[in-house]
Length: 445
Image (cartoon, rainbow, N blue to C red; front, side, top):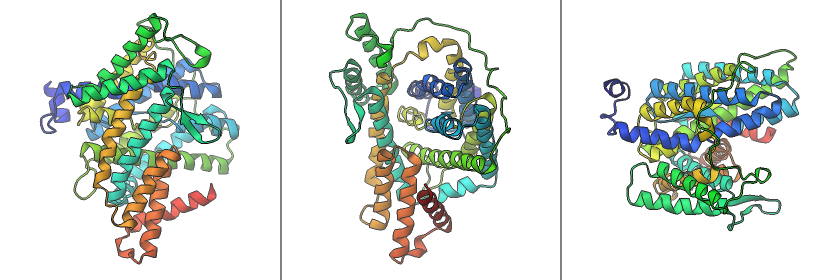
């Protein structure tokens, strides 16, 4: 106990070991899907799926431990969604590179991030983002993760005519996710400790009961997997088929630079967006709009990406689901430490942990979205040069399905409105440079 108090300063941060551990459990439960999804996506490149599970667990644990000890923040890291899809479907699929070359690109990206963090470039970008946009980022992320939760459970589905539509409400998984949301909210209203974590477990147990009674029917082709673990402990698959397999052979230099830039861009602004949003919710950002110990947090992200590539997985980044642990009271690196340990435990207990269905994590994601949207009342919408960029940041994060794209539209509109309104004195030189780079990125596709 003394070791953890000394490392994470629990009393100074007005938290307890119990609260931090519960928050870590909640964060892990909302992130556990990555143990299934990441190997599923990356294995389409020919990588060994068993080795990918092991690499995902180790890389996530390593990155999250770095966050715990470098920055003492309750943020967890894992291979990023979107970045893994770009790795598999664009770099390997569209460009035709082998996965070994794609890993090399991720490795180089990580090294560049370490350099940018060392010379405070990433910190300068964080500090340059206006206060109202920081608050808007928190709101946008809240909307975004609630949308992801509803989509994962089938409440919202893709539609060729209107892009998205309401799913089949009579579906068992959809009904269970909606019931789980109500149960979780009731627990929150009653101030039950670990409400989000309990909401996940209760929803999962209800699903198991439905399967045992025949209400929930297993149909793998339809995505209805068994909710009952088929074992308890299993030895982790070997990582040797993919670890340290980086290759620079057959690289077309211009394509390789494009690939690295794409990884850099998405990772940089997804990470900054997540740090801004979750930190705003947790109250970590100071009166000047700065995040104390941000350098340690950015270093953790950069080191995790570099080591993750060496282990054999795509870019490791700070996860927006960290907001679930923060909402459950997590305030220090003890939360991250707990989550990291659970990723290591998952190596042995994967039959249980990978059985957690997406409809069971939906309630936590939706309720966290509700918590984060509360920050909208602190945004100054009376000044349209501040309010419109904030509005665009929130809107585009959801409809473009990207945290970084939300920041792109928010920053560009902020810079243009300030310039055209003759209020150039309110512009930070860094935000102007970012706006120009964003505009070039936008028009170049």
